[in-house]
Amino acid sequence: MDLLLIFKAIIMGIVEGITEFLPISSTGYLILSADLMGFWTKEKADLFIVVIQLGAILAVVYEYWGRLWHALMGLITGKSEGPNALRNPRQLGLSLIVATIPVMIVGFTMADQIKQYLFNPYIVAIMLILGGLLIFYVERKPIPIVAEEAEDVSFKHALLIGLFQCLALIPGTSRSGSTIIGALWLGVSRKAAAEFSFFLGIPVIIGAGLLDLVKHKDVLSSSEDWLVLGVGIIVSFIVALLCIRWLVDWVSRRDFTIFAWLRIVTGIIVLLVAWIFGYTIQG
Image (cartoon, rainbow, N blue to C red; front, side):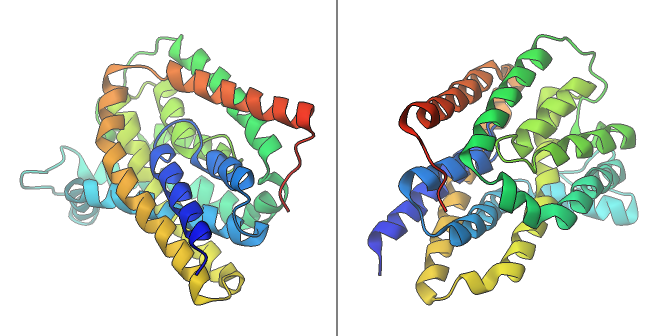
C-alpha cells in the first residue's frame, strides 16, 4: 500500500471539504493541489477530483435532511408539517428542479471536453481572478431583497441561478460562488442564497460524480485505487460537515470580500509561478 498516496488523498479530501461551499472553487483548488503534490496520474486525478465531491454534498444531505425531506414531500403533496415544516415547500422543490436543468444539459453534453481542455492550472488561475473581481462588483452594488428564504426563490430567479451555475463547469469559477453571488445579484438574501446553493448542489454533484465514475471506472485498476478514492470521499464528508454551519453563519453576517481577495491572490501567484519558473501542467 502506498501510504504517501493515501496521505495525499487525505489532503485532497480536506481541501474539498473546506472549499466546496466557499466561493473560491473547490475544483480549482483540487486541480492546483493535485498538480502541486504530483497526485496520481492525470486520468485518475481528474476522476478523483469529480467523484470526491460526493463526500461534501452528502454532508449537505445529512445536515439538512429534515428540510430536504419536507421539500420532497411538499413537492409531491403540497404540504409540509412538523418541526421542520416549510412555508412553501412545493415552491422550493420546483425551483430546485428548474435551476438544475441548465447545468444538467450543458454538463452531460460537454463534460469530457471540459475535463480535457479546461482542467489545468492556467484556466483555474484566470477564472479565480475574474470571479474575485465579480464578487467585488456584486458586494458593492446594493440590491433590494426579494427572497428572504430559500423557498421564496421564484422560478424565474431559479432559472437564472441555474444559468449562473453553468459557469461553474469552468474550473476556477466555483459552483457555490457562482450560484450564491448570482442569487445575491438577483436579490436573494445571504442566508437563502447559501442554502439554495447547497440544496442545488445535491442533484448536480451526485449526478456528475456518479456519471463520471460509471464512464471512467476502468481508470481505477486496483483495490488500492478504490481505497484512495474512498479515503478522499470520507475525509471530504467529515470536513464539509464541520464547515457548513460556519459558512451559513458567515454569509448571514458578512460579505465575501475576503474570498474575493483570496481568489485574486491565488490566481496571481499561480500565474507568476508559471511565468517565473516555467511552471508546466501535469500530464
